[in-house]
Amino acid sequence: MASASADVAPTLTFPAAGNLLAAAIIIALFAAAAVVSAQRKDITKGFDEVAHASYVAHVQHTGSAWPALDDMRLLDPRTFRFTDRANYLNHPPIYYDLLAVVGPKLEGHPRALLADRLIDVAIAACGLAALLGLGLGGRFPREQFYAYAVPLACIPVLVPIAGAVNNDDLAFLGGALTLLGLWQCLCTGRDRWLALALCGIVAAGWAKLTGLLLTAPTVAGVMAYLVWRGRLPRPWSWAVALLAVAALAAVPYLYFTLHYGSPTPETPAQIALIENGARAAGWTDLPRKSFPGYLGYFIVAFIVDWMPALSARGIFNYAMLVIPAAALVCALAGTALSLRRLRHGKEAPLDVVVACGALAIVTTFAIHVTYSYGRYVATGWLLDAYPRYYLPLIAIVPLAGLSLATAIESARWRNALLGFLIAGPIVFRLFGAPLG
Image (cartoon, rainbow, N blue to C red; front, side, top):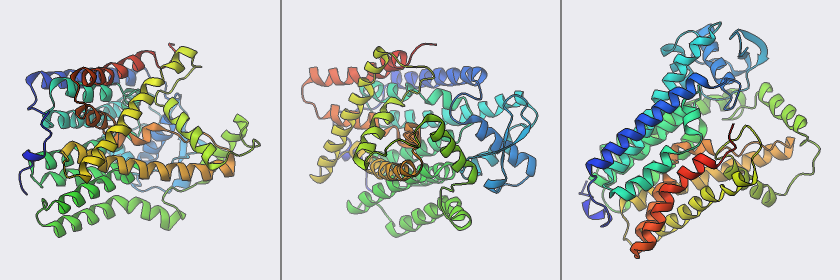
Protein backbone atom coordinates (compact mmCIF):
# COMPACT_ATOMS: atom_id res chain seq x y z
CA MET A 1 0.00 0.00 0.00
CA ALA A 2 1.47 3.36 -0.97
CA SER A 3 2.41 5.94 1.59
CA ALA A 4 -0.45 8.19 2.63
CA SER A 5 1.70 11.12 3.70
CA ALA A 6 0.71 13.13 0.66
CA ASP A 7 -2.95 12.80 1.61
CA VAL A 8 -2.57 14.42 5.02
CA ALA A 9 -3.97 17.94 5.14
CA PRO A 10 -1.21 20.57 5.11
CA THR A 11 -2.52 22.12 8.32
CA LEU A 12 -1.69 18.97 10.28
CA THR A 13 1.62 18.53 12.07
CA PHE A 14 3.10 15.80 14.21
CA PRO A 15 1.55 15.74 17.71
CA ALA A 16 3.44 17.57 20.40
CA ALA A 17 4.26 16.08 23.77
CA GLY A 18 1.60 18.39 25.17
CA ASN A 19 -1.09 16.52 23.25
CA LEU A 20 0.04 13.25 24.76
CA LEU A 21 0.02 14.76 28.25
CA ALA A 22 -3.45 16.21 27.66
CA ALA A 23 -4.70 12.82 26.48
CA ALA A 24 -3.30 11.12 29.58
CA ILE A 25 -4.96 13.70 31.84
CA ILE A 26 -8.31 13.34 30.04
CA ILE A 27 -8.26 9.56 30.38
CA ALA A 28 -7.29 9.77 34.06
CA LEU A 29 -10.05 12.29 34.83
CA PHE A 30 -12.59 10.26 32.88
CA ALA A 31 -11.68 7.04 34.68
CA ALA A 32 -11.82 8.79 38.07
CA ALA A 33 -15.23 10.32 37.33
CA ALA A 34 -16.57 6.98 36.08
CA VAL A 35 -15.33 5.18 39.20
CA VAL A 36 -17.05 7.77 41.41
CA SER A 37 -20.23 7.32 39.37
CA ALA A 38 -19.93 3.54 39.73
CA GLN A 39 -19.71 3.90 43.50
CA ARG A 40 -22.64 6.29 43.82
CA LYS A 41 -25.12 5.50 41.05
CA ASP A 42 -28.55 4.22 42.01
CA ILE A 43 -29.11 1.04 39.99
CA THR A 44 -32.75 2.00 39.37
CA LYS A 45 -31.91 5.38 37.82
CA GLY A 46 -31.38 5.36 34.07
CA PHE A 47 -29.92 3.15 31.33
CA ASP A 48 -31.88 -0.01 32.30
CA GLU A 49 -29.10 -1.21 34.59
CA VAL A 50 -31.37 -3.55 36.55
CA ALA A 51 -32.18 -5.37 33.32
CA HIS A 52 -28.54 -5.53 32.20
CA ALA A 53 -27.35 -6.81 35.60
CA SER A 54 -30.21 -9.33 35.62
CA TYR A 55 -29.03 -10.65 32.23
CA VAL A 56 -25.57 -11.26 33.70
CA ALA A 57 -27.03 -12.92 36.79
CA HIS A 58 -29.23 -15.17 34.65
CA VAL A 59 -26.22 -16.40 32.67
CA GLN A 60 -24.42 -17.13 35.94
CA HIS A 61 -27.46 -18.82 37.46
CA THR A 62 -28.27 -21.09 34.51
CA GLY A 63 -24.78 -21.61 33.08
CA SER A 64 -26.24 -21.03 29.62
CA ALA A 65 -24.06 -18.84 27.40
CA TRP A 66 -27.00 -18.26 25.05
CA PRO A 67 -30.13 -18.07 27.19
CA ALA A 68 -33.67 -17.97 25.85
CA LEU A 69 -34.87 -14.37 26.08
CA ASP A 70 -38.33 -15.41 27.27
CA ASP A 71 -36.88 -17.27 30.25
CA MET A 72 -34.98 -14.36 31.78
CA ARG A 73 -36.24 -12.60 34.90
CA LEU A 74 -35.38 -9.33 36.62
CA LEU A 75 -33.50 -9.05 39.88
CA ASP A 76 -34.91 -7.21 42.85
CA PRO A 77 -32.71 -4.07 42.92
CA ARG A 78 -32.42 -4.26 46.72
CA THR A 79 -31.80 -7.94 47.39
CA PHE A 80 -30.52 -9.05 43.98
CA ARG A 81 -32.79 -12.08 44.16
CA PHE A 82 -34.75 -13.03 41.06
CA THR A 83 -38.36 -11.89 40.91
CA ASP A 84 -41.26 -13.13 38.78
CA ARG A 85 -40.97 -10.10 36.49
CA ALA A 86 -39.68 -10.93 33.01
CA ASN A 87 -36.55 -9.27 31.64
CA TYR A 88 -37.31 -7.18 28.55
CA LEU A 89 -33.79 -6.96 27.04
CA ASN A 90 -33.28 -8.39 23.54
CA HIS A 91 -29.53 -7.97 23.06
CA PRO A 92 -26.94 -10.62 22.11
CA PRO A 93 -25.47 -12.44 25.12
CA ILE A 94 -21.73 -12.01 24.44
CA TYR A 95 -21.25 -8.91 26.59
CA TYR A 96 -23.21 -10.50 29.43
CA ASP A 97 -21.30 -13.77 29.09
CA LEU A 98 -18.08 -11.78 29.49
CA LEU A 99 -19.22 -10.15 32.73
CA ALA A 100 -20.65 -13.45 33.96
CA VAL A 101 -17.23 -15.09 33.63
CA VAL A 102 -14.96 -12.23 34.66
CA GLY A 103 -17.12 -10.67 37.37
CA PRO A 104 -18.33 -12.06 40.71
CA LYS A 105 -21.66 -13.78 41.28
CA LEU A 106 -24.44 -11.19 41.32
CA GLU A 107 -27.47 -13.16 42.49
CA GLY A 108 -28.04 -12.35 46.15
CA HIS A 109 -24.98 -10.07 46.30
CA PRO A 110 -25.85 -6.40 45.69
CA ARG A 111 -22.34 -5.27 46.62
CA ALA A 112 -20.88 -7.40 43.83
CA LEU A 113 -22.37 -5.00 41.29
CA LEU A 114 -19.48 -2.57 41.84
CA ALA A 115 -16.97 -5.06 40.42
CA ASP A 116 -18.98 -5.39 37.19
CA ARG A 117 -19.30 -1.64 37.01
CA LEU A 118 -15.54 -1.25 37.31
CA ILE A 119 -15.10 -3.71 34.43
CA ASP A 120 -17.32 -1.43 32.38
CA VAL A 121 -15.23 1.57 33.42
CA ALA A 122 -12.16 -0.21 32.05
CA ILE A 123 -13.96 -1.06 28.78
CA ALA A 124 -15.12 2.52 28.23
CA ALA A 125 -11.73 3.98 29.22
CA CYS A 126 -10.04 1.78 26.63
CA GLY A 127 -12.50 3.07 24.05
CA LEU A 128 -11.76 6.69 24.95
CA ALA A 129 -8.02 5.98 24.86
CA ALA A 130 -8.40 4.52 21.35
CA LEU A 131 -10.22 7.63 20.16
CA LEU A 132 -7.64 9.94 21.71
CA GLY A 133 -4.96 7.78 20.11
CA LEU A 134 -6.62 8.55 16.79
CA GLY A 135 -6.19 12.24 17.55
CA LEU A 136 -2.54 11.79 18.47
CA GLY A 137 -1.85 9.69 15.39
CA GLY A 138 -3.66 12.26 13.29
CA ARG A 139 -0.86 14.76 13.78
CA PHE A 140 -3.23 17.54 14.83
CA PRO A 141 -1.80 20.85 16.04
CA ARG A 142 -2.59 21.46 19.69
CA GLU A 143 -5.70 23.61 19.23
CA GLN A 144 -7.18 21.11 16.76
CA PHE A 145 -6.40 18.23 19.08
CA TYR A 146 -8.25 19.99 21.91
CA ALA A 147 -11.19 20.71 19.57
CA TYR A 148 -11.33 16.97 18.93
CA ALA A 149 -10.57 15.60 22.40
CA VAL A 150 -12.58 17.93 24.66
CA PRO A 151 -15.98 17.13 23.05
CA LEU A 152 -15.27 13.44 23.54
CA ALA A 153 -14.31 13.95 27.17
CA CYS A 154 -17.48 15.98 27.76
CA ILE A 155 -20.01 13.55 26.27
CA PRO A 156 -22.78 13.89 28.89
CA VAL A 157 -23.86 10.23 28.95
CA LEU A 158 -20.43 8.65 28.70
CA VAL A 159 -19.35 8.83 32.36
CA PRO A 160 -22.64 7.50 33.84
CA ILE A 161 -22.82 4.74 31.20
CA ALA A 162 -19.17 3.82 31.82
CA GLY A 163 -19.93 3.53 35.52
CA ALA A 164 -22.89 1.21 34.94
CA VAL A 165 -23.44 -2.31 33.66
CA ASN A 166 -24.44 -1.54 30.08
CA ASN A 167 -23.64 -3.07 26.69
CA ASP A 168 -23.21 0.44 25.25
CA ASP A 169 -19.72 0.38 26.77
CA LEU A 170 -18.64 -2.55 24.60
CA ALA A 171 -20.26 -0.97 21.54
CA PHE A 172 -18.33 2.25 22.26
CA LEU A 173 -15.05 0.34 22.50
CA GLY A 174 -15.78 -1.52 19.26
CA GLY A 175 -16.52 1.68 17.40
CA ALA A 176 -13.38 3.34 18.77
CA LEU A 177 -11.21 0.44 17.60
CA THR A 178 -12.85 0.61 14.18
CA LEU A 179 -12.14 4.32 13.78
CA LEU A 180 -8.59 4.00 15.10
CA GLY A 181 -7.81 1.18 12.68
CA LEU A 182 -9.25 3.03 9.70
CA TRP A 183 -7.50 6.27 10.60
CA GLN A 184 -4.13 4.64 11.04
CA CYS A 185 -4.54 2.74 7.79
CA LEU A 186 -5.26 5.94 5.88
CA CYS A 187 -2.52 7.99 7.57
CA THR A 188 0.29 5.42 7.54
CA GLY A 189 -0.53 3.52 4.37
CA ARG A 190 -0.26 0.21 6.24
CA ASP A 191 -3.22 -1.99 5.40
CA ARG A 192 -2.62 -4.24 8.41
CA TRP A 193 -4.43 -1.61 10.49
CA LEU A 194 -7.61 -2.78 8.77
CA ALA A 195 -7.43 -5.89 10.95
CA LEU A 196 -8.02 -3.70 14.01
CA ALA A 197 -11.00 -2.09 12.30
CA LEU A 198 -12.44 -5.54 11.59
CA CYS A 199 -12.02 -6.52 15.24
CA GLY A 200 -13.93 -3.37 16.12
CA ILE A 201 -16.86 -4.49 13.96
CA VAL A 202 -17.11 -7.76 15.89
CA ALA A 203 -16.94 -6.06 19.30
CA ALA A 204 -19.51 -3.40 18.40
CA GLY A 205 -21.76 -5.85 16.54
CA TRP A 206 -21.78 -8.40 19.31
CA ALA A 207 -22.72 -5.66 21.78
CA LYS A 208 -25.81 -4.41 19.93
CA LEU A 209 -27.32 -4.19 16.46
CA THR A 210 -26.70 -0.46 16.08
CA GLY A 211 -23.00 -1.13 16.67
CA LEU A 212 -22.95 -3.43 13.65
CA LEU A 213 -25.00 -1.04 11.51
CA LEU A 214 -22.60 1.80 12.28
CA THR A 215 -19.21 0.12 12.05
CA ALA A 216 -19.52 -2.36 9.16
CA PRO A 217 -20.64 0.20 6.54
CA THR A 218 -17.92 2.62 7.69
CA VAL A 219 -15.21 0.01 7.13
CA ALA A 220 -16.78 -1.01 3.82
CA GLY A 221 -16.79 2.62 2.71
CA VAL A 222 -13.13 3.17 3.55
CA MET A 223 -12.14 -0.08 1.83
CA ALA A 224 -14.10 0.95 -1.26
CA TYR A 225 -12.27 4.28 -1.24
CA LEU A 226 -8.89 2.55 -1.00
CA VAL A 227 -9.76 0.28 -3.91
CA TRP A 228 -11.00 3.28 -5.89
CA ARG A 229 -7.69 5.06 -5.33
CA GLY A 230 -5.67 1.92 -6.02
CA ARG A 231 -4.19 1.94 -2.53
CA LEU A 232 -5.35 -1.43 -1.19
CA PRO A 233 -3.17 -4.46 -1.97
CA ARG A 234 -4.98 -7.80 -2.22
CA PRO A 235 -8.41 -6.12 -2.43
CA TRP A 236 -10.22 -9.43 -2.92
CA SER A 237 -8.62 -10.86 0.21
CA TRP A 238 -9.72 -7.85 2.25
CA ALA A 239 -13.20 -8.00 0.72
CA VAL A 240 -13.53 -11.65 1.77
CA ALA A 241 -12.22 -10.77 5.23
CA LEU A 242 -14.79 -7.98 5.58
CA LEU A 243 -17.64 -10.25 4.50
CA ALA A 244 -16.49 -12.99 6.88
CA VAL A 245 -16.19 -10.57 9.80
CA ALA A 246 -19.56 -8.95 9.05
CA ALA A 247 -21.14 -12.40 8.93
CA LEU A 248 -19.51 -13.30 12.24
CA ALA A 249 -20.72 -10.09 13.84
CA ALA A 250 -24.22 -10.75 12.45
CA VAL A 251 -24.49 -14.29 13.87
CA PRO A 252 -26.52 -13.20 16.94
CA TYR A 253 -29.04 -11.41 14.75
CA LEU A 254 -29.35 -14.30 12.34
CA TYR A 255 -30.01 -16.51 15.35
CA PHE A 256 -32.64 -14.09 16.66
CA THR A 257 -34.29 -13.93 13.24
CA LEU A 258 -34.48 -17.71 13.00
CA HIS A 259 -35.80 -18.17 16.53
CA TYR A 260 -37.88 -15.04 17.08
CA GLY A 261 -38.60 -13.77 13.58
CA SER A 262 -36.67 -10.53 13.98
CA PRO A 263 -33.06 -9.39 14.60
CA THR A 264 -34.51 -7.28 17.42
CA PRO A 265 -36.97 -9.68 19.05
CA GLU A 266 -40.14 -8.19 20.50
CA THR A 267 -40.53 -10.50 23.46
CA PRO A 268 -43.72 -10.45 25.53
CA ALA A 269 -41.85 -8.60 28.27
CA GLN A 270 -40.68 -5.87 25.90
CA ILE A 271 -44.11 -5.51 24.32
CA ALA A 272 -45.65 -5.19 27.77
CA LEU A 273 -43.04 -2.60 28.78
CA ILE A 274 -43.79 -0.46 25.72
CA GLU A 275 -47.57 -0.77 25.90
CA ASN A 276 -47.80 -0.22 29.65
CA GLY A 277 -45.33 2.66 29.52
CA ALA A 278 -47.24 4.38 26.72
CA ARG A 279 -50.52 3.87 28.56
CA ALA A 280 -49.11 5.23 31.83
CA ALA A 281 -47.74 8.31 30.04
CA GLY A 282 -51.10 8.96 28.38
CA TRP A 283 -49.76 8.46 24.84
CA THR A 284 -51.87 5.48 23.80
CA ASP A 285 -55.03 7.38 22.88
CA LEU A 286 -53.41 10.51 21.46
CA PRO A 287 -53.74 11.20 17.71
CA ARG A 288 -50.70 9.86 15.85
CA LYS A 289 -48.31 12.27 14.15
CA SER A 290 -47.51 12.02 10.47
CA PHE A 291 -44.06 10.70 9.63
CA PRO A 292 -42.66 14.22 8.98
CA GLY A 293 -44.15 15.38 12.26
CA TYR A 294 -42.68 12.41 14.09
CA LEU A 295 -39.31 12.98 12.44
CA GLY A 296 -39.27 16.58 13.70
CA TYR A 297 -40.20 15.42 17.19
CA PHE A 298 -37.55 12.69 17.06
CA ILE A 299 -34.76 15.11 16.10
CA VAL A 300 -35.70 17.55 18.87
CA ALA A 301 -35.92 14.74 21.44
CA PHE A 302 -32.60 13.39 20.19
CA ILE A 303 -30.87 16.72 20.92
CA VAL A 304 -32.63 17.18 24.26
CA ASP A 305 -31.66 13.69 25.41
CA TRP A 306 -27.99 14.26 24.59
CA MET A 307 -27.88 15.12 28.30
CA PRO A 308 -30.61 13.18 30.11
CA ALA A 309 -32.10 15.02 33.10
CA LEU A 310 -33.75 13.38 36.10
CA SER A 311 -35.64 16.60 36.96
CA ALA A 312 -37.41 19.28 34.94
CA ARG A 313 -35.20 21.61 32.91
CA GLY A 314 -35.48 25.37 33.26
CA ILE A 315 -35.38 27.96 30.49
CA PHE A 316 -31.64 28.38 30.99
CA ASN A 317 -31.07 24.63 30.61
CA TYR A 318 -33.10 24.57 27.41
CA ALA A 319 -31.17 27.56 26.09
CA MET A 320 -27.97 25.55 26.52
CA LEU A 321 -29.24 23.07 23.93
CA VAL A 322 -28.20 25.55 21.27
CA ILE A 323 -24.63 24.37 21.87
CA PRO A 324 -25.02 20.72 20.75
CA ALA A 325 -27.38 21.89 18.00
CA ALA A 326 -24.71 24.30 16.71
CA ALA A 327 -22.07 21.57 16.96
CA LEU A 328 -24.26 19.33 14.80
CA VAL A 329 -24.65 22.12 12.23
CA CYS A 330 -20.87 22.51 12.14
CA ALA A 331 -20.51 18.75 11.72
CA LEU A 332 -23.00 18.72 8.84
CA ALA A 333 -21.13 21.56 7.14
CA GLY A 334 -17.81 19.79 7.67
CA THR A 335 -19.24 16.56 6.27
CA ALA A 336 -20.44 18.39 3.15
CA LEU A 337 -16.95 19.87 2.70
CA SER A 338 -15.34 16.45 3.10
CA LEU A 339 -17.67 14.98 0.47
CA ARG A 340 -16.81 17.89 -1.82
CA ARG A 341 -13.06 17.30 -1.40
CA LEU A 342 -13.58 13.62 -2.18
CA ARG A 343 -15.44 14.50 -5.35
CA HIS A 344 -12.64 16.80 -6.49
CA GLY A 345 -9.83 14.42 -5.51
CA LYS A 346 -8.44 16.75 -2.83
CA GLU A 347 -9.30 14.62 0.19
CA ALA A 348 -7.22 13.94 3.30
CA PRO A 349 -7.67 10.96 5.68
CA LEU A 350 -9.90 13.22 7.76
CA ASP A 351 -12.31 13.62 4.84
CA VAL A 352 -12.46 9.89 4.09
CA VAL A 353 -13.25 8.91 7.68
CA VAL A 354 -15.78 11.72 8.11
CA ALA A 355 -17.58 10.94 4.85
CA CYS A 356 -17.77 7.18 5.40
CA GLY A 357 -18.72 7.52 9.07
CA ALA A 358 -21.35 10.16 8.38
CA LEU A 359 -22.98 8.05 5.68
CA ALA A 360 -23.15 5.11 8.10
CA ILE A 361 -24.70 7.35 10.77
CA VAL A 362 -27.30 8.73 8.36
CA THR A 363 -28.23 5.24 7.19
CA THR A 364 -28.53 3.92 10.75
CA PHE A 365 -30.50 6.99 11.79
CA ALA A 366 -32.96 6.42 8.93
CA ILE A 367 -33.46 2.80 10.01
CA HIS A 368 -33.77 3.91 13.64
CA VAL A 369 -36.44 6.52 12.89
CA THR A 370 -38.41 4.22 10.57
CA TYR A 371 -38.43 1.39 13.12
CA SER A 372 -39.36 3.75 15.94
CA TYR A 373 -42.18 5.31 13.93
CA GLY A 374 -43.71 1.89 13.35
CA ARG A 375 -43.63 1.20 17.08
CA TYR A 376 -45.03 4.67 17.78
CA VAL A 377 -47.97 4.17 15.39
CA ALA A 378 -48.74 0.80 16.99
CA THR A 379 -48.46 1.85 20.65
CA GLY A 380 -47.93 5.60 20.99
CA TRP A 381 -44.47 5.03 22.51
CA LEU A 382 -42.31 8.18 22.32
CA LEU A 383 -39.05 7.24 24.03
CA ASP A 384 -36.86 5.86 21.26
CA ALA A 385 -34.65 8.87 20.44
CA TYR A 386 -31.53 7.80 22.35
CA PRO A 387 -28.27 9.46 21.22
CA ARG A 388 -26.23 6.89 23.17
CA TYR A 389 -26.99 4.37 20.42
CA TYR A 390 -24.54 6.34 18.26
CA LEU A 391 -21.61 6.27 20.68
CA PRO A 392 -19.66 3.82 18.45
CA LEU A 393 -19.17 6.59 15.87
CA ILE A 394 -19.54 9.65 18.08
CA ALA A 395 -16.02 10.82 17.17
CA ILE A 396 -17.28 11.60 13.67
CA VAL A 397 -18.95 14.75 15.04
CA PRO A 398 -15.78 16.52 16.31
CA LEU A 399 -13.83 15.19 13.32
CA ALA A 400 -16.40 16.76 11.00
CA GLY A 401 -16.05 19.98 12.98
CA LEU A 402 -12.33 19.91 12.26
CA SER A 403 -13.11 19.37 8.58
CA LEU A 404 -15.02 22.64 8.65
CA ALA A 405 -12.28 24.43 10.61
CA THR A 406 -9.53 23.44 8.17
CA ALA A 407 -11.53 24.97 5.32
CA ILE A 408 -11.67 28.43 6.91
CA GLU A 409 -8.92 30.61 5.50
CA SER A 410 -9.28 33.46 7.99
CA ALA A 411 -7.20 32.73 11.07
CA ARG A 412 -9.56 34.79 13.23
CA TRP A 413 -12.69 32.89 12.19
CA ARG A 414 -10.92 29.54 12.26
CA ASN A 415 -9.74 30.17 15.81
CA ALA A 416 -13.21 31.34 16.79
CA LEU A 417 -14.70 28.07 15.55
CA LEU A 418 -12.03 26.02 17.30
CA GLY A 419 -12.69 28.00 20.47
CA PHE A 420 -16.38 27.15 20.25
CA LEU A 421 -15.66 23.48 19.62
CA ILE A 422 -13.46 23.43 22.73
CA ALA A 423 -15.45 25.63 25.13
CA GLY A 424 -18.98 24.71 23.99
CA PRO A 425 -18.98 21.13 25.29
CA ILE A 426 -17.56 22.26 28.63
CA VAL A 427 -20.24 24.93 29.08
CA PHE A 428 -22.98 22.50 28.09
CA ARG A 429 -21.63 19.81 30.38
CA LEU A 430 -21.76 22.25 33.31
CA PHE A 431 -25.09 23.95 32.63
CA GLY A 432 -27.04 21.75 30.23
CA ALA A 433 -29.03 19.98 32.95
CA PRO A 434 -30.60 21.21 36.19
CA LEU A 435 -28.47 20.86 39.30
CA GLY A 436 -29.46 18.33 41.90
